[in-house]
Length: 326
Image 1 (cartoon, rainbow, N blue to C red):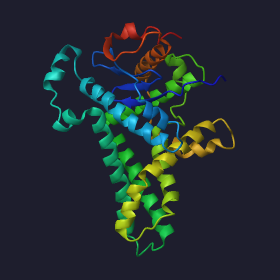
Image 2 (cartoon, rainbow, N blue to C red; image 1 turned 45 degrees about the horizontal axis):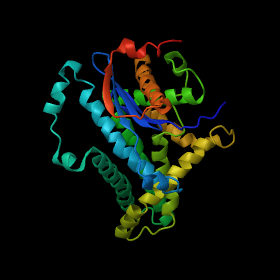
Image 3 (cartoon, one colour; image 1 turned 180 degrees about the horizontal axis):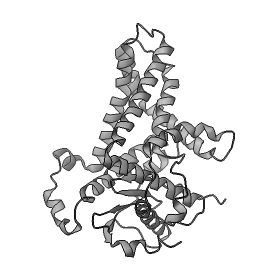
Image 4 (cartoon, rainbow, N blue to C red; image 1 turned 90 degrees about the vertical axis):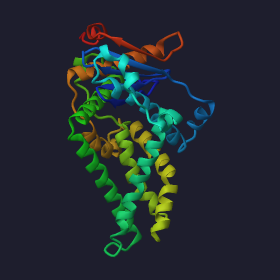
């Protein structure tokens, strides 16, 4: 099997999928009149970011910040439009009342701040809870393992609870569609609904796997620092967040490279198991949306003209004529 030069990735949206290519980020969403609407952003990167992404352990942090900043723009696009009749699009700008924080900082920075705050809560809370059981589990090793277990329970419980809501269930289906499209592309299969539906909804490079690896890697890292007193435990957990993220990113890259080696591919299985919760089997209509997004990303990467940012609405039959060919 020929190795693909570009490792494409994506993100599930409300009623859509965003894919990231070499030259652009493209979202495709299904409107309530069944048309497909695209949101395209030119991929721009500073020289500093490019250099930092060449440094192991640092590149993971840079990639995560970029993904958070970019992802929130596409999430905002999808959430504004998925349930609005296209005839009423002119009302979106009029009715949308952005917070002062968004207007001052911009969506990208708000996305990064949201990630940092959620990461702080997810890191600090398990440490505090585990400390309450210090009389039962007094050793440092026991406390670190208990903290990791509590963090895992929080993670699985949160994912399970939100998956019960209809809208998140559909987002998880689009997540599955995103993975199926990438798997088909990397396996040199045709980008048609029939071929893609035969692919797995799981993928080694998934962000869900990354989140789980931060829990596992954190257990090993925390073994080297003190758990007492509580205030120092909280401080070192916060200080070590970049370390845990950087290590987890490298582990994710390694498991992806080893996925075709029979003896070593099991290293990525924990992340795949978590994806059984964060992905669902998509229907054909959801796969069609994912294909439209991915094909536009591929077209941009192969284009001779520079990519520009824009929005475009295309009626379903026009957008999907090639997608439905087998």
